[in-house]
Length: 510
Image (cartoon, rainbow, N blue to C red; front, side, top):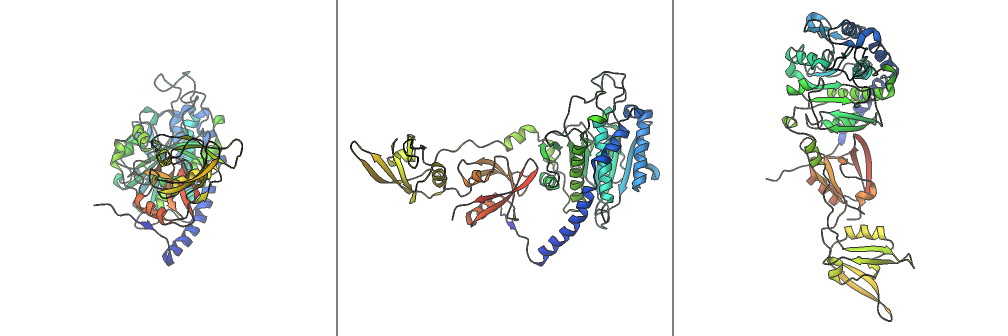
């Protein structure tokens, strides 16, 4: 049976109340978002990446001091202790400690669901052959790895506290120890959770967010639940980062123990660099404004998850997907064959005349009797004025259609009317797409046909179409029906590299 799909409209008193509510909530969210400041992030990075913490190796004197600093911050913020026996600490492997604090949810129905937002606070101390790219015996302060992620999470906490009321769902903030030793802290917590693991609906991880370059942030994990890419992109509206939605999901940071237990995950990362796991990863190299933007993105995502319904459910297929599957999904379609089968150019002696410079064998133009050197006067009952408008018209007209040419005979020019049966169906928009079960209600463009209205509007292959003039659609068939019946300009909400924008396509008359 063919799947039925539909278009969703917001209207009436229910839609109006929804919009008013969103405006009120949005103003509080904006205040909270803007409370995340680069200066605050800098303070925490400068403290944690100071020599006095001796590189924060797990279980070491410096690592313990860093954990104590973080517990003090949670206490200062007034977060509820979420560690062992009413403390902020969860101890493991002797002197290693996770630091845990919670904001209790305000919604009676959802406060027993948890979002975990975390970052590891340990680094590699003085370095070993296993943990450092050298030199050894020198303090590795780990400003980016991962004082930057810790500072970002602390800023997110302050943003939630700036709201007029707590979020609907509870948020557990976790600072993991022993990540550099093999994800010790997050593995210990998932084996010995301090809140029910089956009520954790999402894990957001920040690992190395301090070296933002060219606005690029890698976002891992959007395949672990349906709709996460769209959710992250909506969260990016105020930060406008260029997001690379990686399909890799390795056991290389603290999101992975959650993923292994079927909890959807997201991880933010600004990429490796020449200072990684070296003593040169120092505080003065951090891009604090960039870390501020990533922290604001994390807050926006966590905010949506804390208030939204339904809860994203784990997507089992994410276990078997990888970069090669992404390549296949985003692979452009090969160019389709020409509809008319000619090459055109303005006449060198008269730029107002359009001349056939080539007529391809076996295609509609040759079959209709057109020849190289013919001058096109009219096509589909319209005067031929320039090459671009003609090529667009060729895509759009019904077949068969008419053409008038001027042909130079031996002693005179003759005007000739011909009928042409064009190849392929006429196009209104000029795109092809693929659909993906991880992105329901989204079209992933696999083709943008040259000279089409879509190309003229600036659409590109791999753009995602989310809405048509505020309306969502369940599948490609519903979108195709909209295009077929639409009158006038067509505003499309698209996503490109995590950035949302509205592109208006000028469709031809129906």
